[in-house]
Length: 445
Image (cartoon, rainbow, N blue to C red; front, side, top):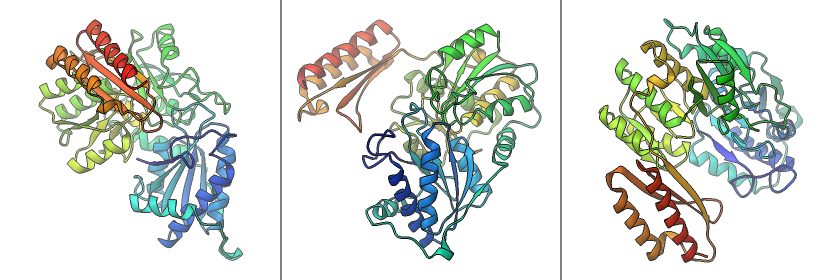
């Protein structure tokens, strides 16, 4: 887990617009340095993805840290989960990632990890936010922080990823197309799978600062699907810009999403006696997934959408496996945060153990059609408090019965209501989703 600072709105910002600017990054680095120094911290690691603004923000962030007396070690482009892992292995007091994950190149953000490779405690985040409001000061010259570079970071992380794959297995005989989204995994993921014996066809591994997540990666798998069919590969693996999400493509060119991948991992772990407790999903986890794990007698709970909420539920229940349909999967038996490469390796281990294809590993799991409509509303009317909207929702739920569900969720950043309906009848699901969306528009126009 990590904290994102996209600027003063706390959500997102664009370089060249407001609010993510070099002076904000400098001040954030200084504010974090002030808090870290009070805890005796002197060393932090800094990684980034491949978007062009990372160079600028990296320099500004380091300047702020140095002014607060904090030493910074740079790793260059590295996946977010790699920074979490290396923060632990290098015994650093904190790790920082400059990345906007699956967003387009013109967005960027800054994420923090604790010395344990987890999100910072809330009280530390609040202290940093409080320091941002203060004027920047500088320590004495003799106490300024120093900068250094870690040259073997990629190799260390590659070895870690390989260590999460069973030592008595390999990937020989598998042809895999690996889509790195022109992001932080471009120089790492292909090597992990090659060194485990697979024939790898690398795709979207030529970052230019502007092409991250553009028509490739976990958020757009159409090109990967075509590559799998073109090369008659056994499967395709797609990561997002910072490598914490994964999607897969089977040999027929069909996408296998995060829910399906998590089902494969859970079933494999259970058969091996490795599964600790149950599974944490989110409000968006497909109902068919919930029903499938119930048949396996695996406990399941839903968290709010967002990896931090999944992690909170995992820690509360003392479980080890959770994730989202977006492909952000957390395997706490191996790492401390969502890791696309590690998650993919768990799926591949299941395939090798059972001598089955990716499609065969899904068994009888068939996800229900899920329709999502974003409705913009105006004025002071809260659509979740509208009697007319709630009546339409109740009628929809009655028609769906046990074979479906309705979820209405407000965006945390803009006046949007996300209307989600899912069920085993696609025609019915689509009709009900549109009826609810239309009622929201009528009541909240």
